[in-house]
Length: 585
Image (cartoon, rainbow, N blue to C red; front, side, top):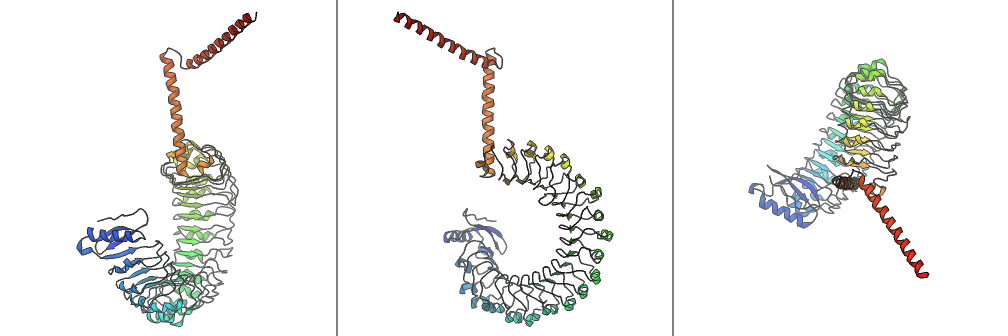
């Protein structure tokens, strides 16, 4: 399989041939294109010449579509996103085999008529372009189109003609526009499975959607909805419904008829309760109710026994009912920014729990029963009121990520030596505390990749830090460090070292400000100088021993020599004085 790498500047991209895959480095200049074409001609088998099927030329600062691309007649997938292309050339029709085309994040204002001749096109993304929406009707001629993304194009109205002619659409993306409604003709999109209308100006749920019975995903987040029609029950294939950040005060009982619903996010609304009928949603495994003033958990939630993910952030909760223990399949639970004064013991019954967030509550202690959460890998307890580090968590043998920064809560002054018990720990976040030192046992955390200790009072680092050989990120900014361990550069896998805001002297601030590479070089040079000084000292000692003197006698010899020299000078001065006296007489 040939591999072409012609330049160190540019971008690696994949070129897929009909029965081979190779890598080509694409640059924006003509010379590179000629070189690549020459390689294709000379190094590929005859049957593969000109059979390029996939090309990625995204983020290349193209101001126009490269003419050489139009010569690739067999091209099926083309990525030109994140460039500076302003116009689509009329010769675009030459790509008559194109099936996937990404032109998002450019400066395109018009779609030429020839664009409608791409009859095999199945996926098109024109998002984030300053398009004149009137030219969008040309898209209606692309009868094989399956996916159409038009995010962030300042669209006020969706073209009726697209609804009438693109009967095969499976995905329609219209998020981040200015739409207030959809045309009634949208009911013609009978094969539509996914519709994304997030961040528009819908004041009411478009009822036409309820007639599209193939729909599986409906996204209407960040609009102005005040209600959901009861007709939503017609969406028998609905799998995911996103209605967060609206003005909803209730959820219709009929939603329970959408028996395939697996994900429901109603966060950020004005809900006070949930309909009891929702307990019939036996396949619901993800529920979002964050940022709602519930204060008391609706009893319906505890009857959704299939739940795996539950978001209850900032809901005013201060306790959980005993029935919460029935949610035995829960794997992810977010209870952050609530009013819990103690760790909810009922959580300890959730044996499958893997991720638990209790950040920004009012807890001062953690129950020893937490040890029963043996599958817990992520624990967030930042911003609470622990008087000391809660050592109960050391029993969580599977823990991989621990968040215990205290930007809002009571600051910790000590990190116990027993932190080494968390042998599977990969990331430790203990920022915004009042730590003056770190335990010497940190080197036993051999799986640790991230150590975030910024904004503490650290005045030195233990040498054991140098032996956390897998460490990738070490964040130490805003502390009181003046020196670093001599062997810190033994952390060969470290990618990020941040020492900003420390009164560094060894290495000095000007070295630390240049980044990890400069610090490493400084430490190596320091060791070299220390080694040379030690070598010279040992050499002197060896000389003295060979002369039959003690290992420190050379110092005495030097002292004696300097004394004898002074005596000789004194005698010389006295003789000169005597001679002068005789002359005077």
